[in-house]
Image 1 (cartoon, rainbow, N blue to C red):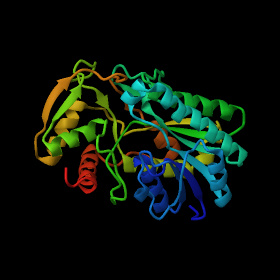
Image 2: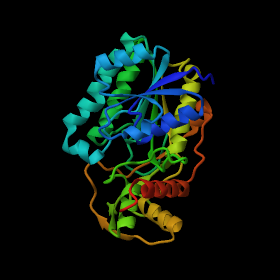
Image 3: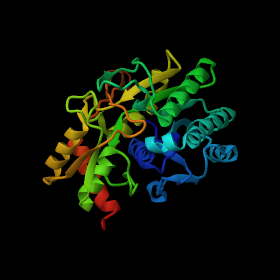
Image 4: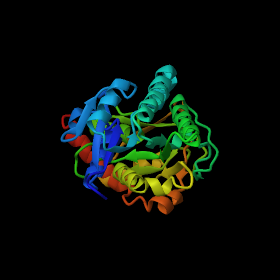
Length: 332
């Protein structure tokens, strides 16, 4: 891969976007970042071209492209992502995730950039039975957040059909872990995802609540496909490297990114206790708005078209998450 290749990463100072940027650098790909730093951290973009601002600002996108005319692909990670928040404030999510994406795509089209890799989500699937899903499985997004991801996929599909762009939608399952070289990690002090909440409870001597114990899974708790964020980042590099080949036959492609196995929340707790050698006080609560039983990935297409497979385990993800939590907030 030529070191002259340059990509624009929206949300590139956030947890996933910054890790993707690090993987790009390690592969000889130069990242340029747009991030409003509402949830991202400036230090995660150290040594990288960072433009602080809104992806929906046409003047900013024009300036970025003018100053980096060799940008050839955009990795679009910027989004609001907290499911319960989307239920409470749907308009803000539709504006941020859909409205601003439309403005971004207009700016890219105006500047002659027609290749997009989109950070989508497995939450778009009908995930009521805790089973495996392929990219052709039925869709039934159950929260405003999930519906924004499905809507952007549809926008990309329609735009590709119209000849305006080519796009790959990467449907993430449940990212955990941190950059193994500790360049970035999950930075929220009050995380909403299962492992982050579990770590907070463990380190602060609190109680971890399993949200729902009557899901149609093997132990009643929700099921997730946990994928290490570094594996996720590597997949983005492969998508950049293989973009033209992947989109040659069809200008819009969807690819699952997951570990390919399902782990229930109770099993996550057991794995956490195995890794730490400690115990966690656990209670059971009600289901949260927007939650589903869960699903896990059939990642065969990623193996076929990206030559990518998840390599890191759930134990690796727990260890790296714990190491990052200590680094990020050593006093808690």
